[in-house]
Image (cartoon, rainbow, N blue to C red):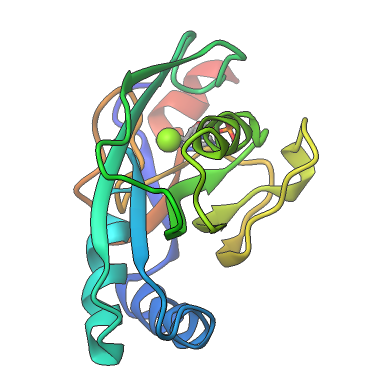
Length: 186
Ligand code: 5GP
Ligand code: MG
């Protein structure tokens, strides 16, 4: 796909309004708790940054840590093999944890993270994703806080990449072939 066209499905304003709404709920559920937020890199970095800044209004005073996971396979077909490249480094025993990821697709990444975190004996673990693709699910898992549901389409922007690019976009978009490309196939 050369020079694809980006079709915006959620713009900057819509994303920020939705984040503020999610944070309102999180603030109630996590009031007076010892909160640790764990971002799953790389995809969650922009969402997490906006999420914690929105949370500041409620003085939840979280610790923030990251896990880096890698999966084998091409970027458009997430594979089943997941490996921890960087593990949690904050003590989670007795803490209330919020795992933040960009998108819940097959659910395998989140399932893997939840299994790993159980060993660290947190008091509670909830999950927050910006995007959810429920029709793609391969394992029985759901997120406690969801930004938007999307269909079975590959999305980019706001932290999500295509071959390492597009993470910088302040919006979420789908990539479509440019008209030139389309006509070549006809
Ligand atoms: P899982 O299938 O394990 O739920 O999701 C694995 C990872 O695949 C996500 O964290 C995300 O990094 C990536 N992924 C899934 N769907 C998409 C998508 O539509 N766009 C992009 N850029 N990444 C995706
Ligand atoms: Mg990811």
